[in-house]
Length: 356
Image (cartoon, rainbow, N blue to C red; front, side):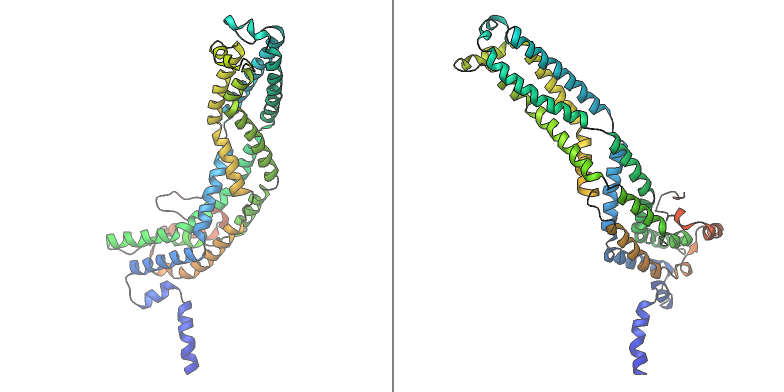
């Protein structure tokens, strides 16, 4: 008898919370709220919150990739084209005419050769930036967004439904207490949401496949974007340096820049437009950073393990839920019983059914 008494507590601890609550003659809404509290503990224990936050980050990257606008890139291409035109104009005048206007036009003849060397070196730098811009393609990222969307169509509702389950049951209990009635819940939907199957595993594998060529794509694109950003961020000062009057008459530079060559005026105007376009292009830069931080080194086990652990723990908690609540949709019970599991997801408070 002593051995049987020692086993009894262990057996009792494995009993579903709902059945223990029924044995204690608690109000149904109190029992449901206790289950919600225990599910919240299970959620913490299984790290499901971390999985939920990770899913949010992936969703953000997916949306940015899917909705990339081509307009900032097209504007930048127009700016770069204008830059080339102005640079070629300046190079032509450095050989044939002077690089100053007004009363400094004739004086510029003696220092043109020195400015011409700096101008040619600057033009070679610009060509690298031109090539970097041409290498930036949005299509691979837009296609990536589409592939991510297909995977997340299953992953996101599954994780969100499981993460919201404790809060949902708490709301059900509080509503019943407020109305002084038995709790009402769609128990079939709740229980089916716990039966995570091969569909989420396949979706996680699909998400992993999105990582295949991502490091090379992101690293190359970030390098090209950095060249573009650094060049135009420094361009205003570089333009002044290129067209500065060399020694021993460098003191004349301010006077020269008060009546600059047309190319200087144009390049300064194009630079302002480039800076504005880079600001509009910031969303693309944020996408590159986000993909590097979130998706490239993503371990999908950080999603799948919490989902499996919480589902297992929650299944035991909810074994006797139907004894504590009234069925919200009794007519649908047979439908749920014959429907493929992967097409059903739990109803979050205030949400429509997520049915495929």
